[in-house]
Image (tube, rainbow, N blue to C red):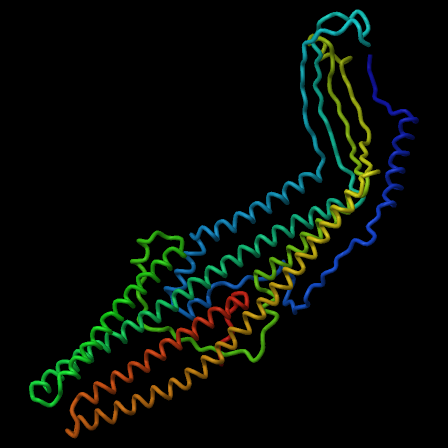
Length: 476
């Protein structure tokens, strides 16, 4: 006999009444007094956060040449910290995929078979009462959540914002790593320059000692001056050893930052001299660059994620409505399971109504709003920190530029003294000791210039970090 599945008018009326009641109860949701208190700082934004084009590391070649650029590229590929940050993107992407799957129809299968004895003293009628038989059921179950209140949209907002925040955090990790390597490279350049100048001083001191010994034998100098020069030689030898050790330590740091073993340090060539790049100091802070800094973009997306969480918390005030259904086979005894008379089918709404939650839902919403305020304040702090960092680096660059100008004057003066002493030596009115003394003085000024140049390059690298990895245009 053919069976059909029908829904009676009474049942349809019950379903309609339940849905109507759920819709009416949704109007009773009370969010009064729960709202954000913190206000975001307004910073000029050069584009939507999700359309930001992250700067590459091309600035590194301008500052340190091809070897620095290669070191940074190696680090971005192999450094565990960057790789760890990248896994957060995969986790956020997986969360989005999971939320997208939750918005689809859920279809599951279920099968069970239980062999049991049925009680004689219960509601089981004879002849089943007191007998033993297998209870079998196979069903296909369907479920679909009806979204009247924007739950799915809020979930998408959370998922997308979390993924974008993870991407920005990864870029921030790359920027910090690039900055650390570039700063170590500047130190390596300075150390190499100082070692070269120290070795030049040491050679001059040894020449001085040779001349001093000749003058001592001729009775033109006393032993005190010769001994004092030997002290200077010993000090320069110790200084050269210190610079060599510093170079080795810096190369080791660069190898580790690049995600390589200590043996990799031996392959890092020592720079010949401090790399100089033309640089134009901006007259004012480029706020549009600061607003694109990965750290700030990540903080902005965290605010969006928390606002999505607030929407989800509000959604819990409303009824949850699911359409559920099943179809399959059910029988007592396996021999009857696959017969047409064993068919079962059912469908209807499943409604969850939050009637009396004892203030739990308001407390949850209040907590999410407080978390959003916290995210806003963290964003504001990130903006202020970026502005402070950029301002400090600009101040350092301006101060260093003045010091370098003064140092150039001192160096020129030392060069003039050397020129005069060489002329006097060449015409025979003076011996070579004043020439050596002037050369030593000039090298001392060159050492001071090396320190200032390294400080200037370090400030430039830090300014690049403060501006989100963008290298300011060189002066035309």
